[in-house]
Image 1 (cartoon, rainbow, N blue to C red):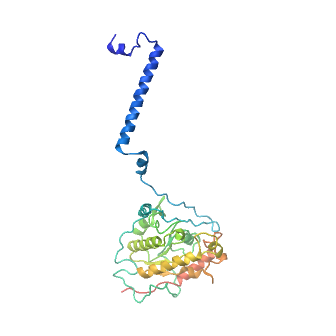
Image 2 (cartoon, rainbow, N blue to C red; image 1 turned 90 degrees about the vertical axis):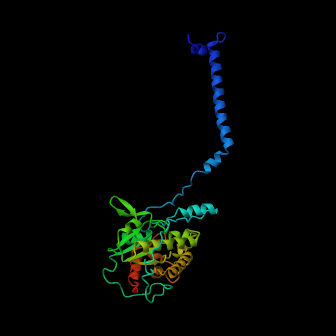
Image 3 (tube, helix red, strand yellow; image 1 turned 45 degrees about the horizontal axis):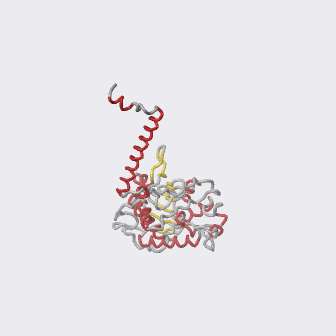
Length: 326
């Protein structure tokens, strides 16, 4: 019999059951000692469980988006702007937004090498002769679900439409919304491979729920710079936000005509400062009180019917910038 066999054998004076109990107690003591050693080492290193958890990175959850429904059933997705109470988290949220690449000096309507002659940017695009047939065959309409109705109702068959329900100025270029093959690519990717004569932007309805007007204007300004960089030959129009019905405006939501007017004022001021074209599209659809007529809107009081799209497009066709560059 080897020494190892002798060590594992139960003592002669103990029963086999008593020896087994003693062995189990010995194993339990060893485990307790091992666990205590780990806890002690962790405490001495100064790392607590709560501190370890705090070191995990935070990931922003995008706002929910509802698929487009029928005209009378559509709902605007209210996109919350990043406005947490602590400055640290506010900066973290804003950094998650797409960064604007540096704007090219020769881009857009007012690049350093393309100064328009005799145009007052502090005012909306004035009325012009009606557009000729084919004027919008190489035009892009870019925006949220309201813009999507242009394609859905066939308002301008020769034009391209980049739009998605819930789209905002923050994710307009990064969100995959342009069909390509079996999938979709971002508007930024699509614009790198296409060239448009005119680009009509319409954003702001979803952003009415943002608590920071400064963030909205900053993001919109960055979007314009990026579109100018990607489409240096295109004339870019910034369309005003359309009004909502009086009933919608009074239902205690962010979608009020007072807020629409405020945001449109900010957009017009932004265009004046950037030398961008401001198209006062809301003037085509607002009634004498500044609201969307009930018979022009869908059930939600925000989206518009086909007849209202036709009225809007008539306005677009008769308000085309006809300036020249020097």
